Image (cartoon, rainbow, N blue to C red; front, top):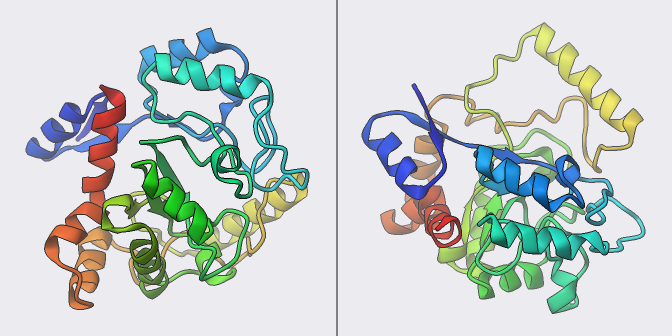
Length: 268
């Protein structure tokens, strides 16, 4: 059973009922761009998370793969103010504005979530954050979500060890109150059939042809950890973290507690 999530209380109720809570979100700001009224309408319909840009540029600003690296456009601050009015966890304010770091409008403003990234200090990549950026997100009260993507391992399919390495690096730099999981993947296990392999290869080729692929997108760099491809992936990850000496309280924060805190602060 699924439950629609609009508030933190919805998440708690879903857990008590044994349901899976669904938080509706946008991966790109193209659905509203410079139309603040449309953003407020989307919020009314249930959108609670937004990512202002994807890899490419839109009217709000430059995505992380744009060579010009121009940051926010003039429309960006208007989207920022509209998001605040709508109580979104996503003001599109690039770190460069406040911290002099490289631009990425997907890094959200104080008290918000940067939900799909890795650590540039372990595997340099445009979608990863430097140590200075990790500290800046933490200093603002935000949360960094480590994804499960081939960028963690320079193009090969990631493993649990890769995910844990990036989690541990982020915890070391930003602190345990500012790190979480941002899988950027599906909930169900993936069955690697010949049909899946062919479809994934075709999708990768199309992304490259359209210019939306990022470095290290490969035809066999599947978007899940090879040894966490089960319904118990998070339980398994928790067990491995505890086996490495991380306390139960820290693991609870990383596996959702920190996100719950920030959602409570931003959703109202």
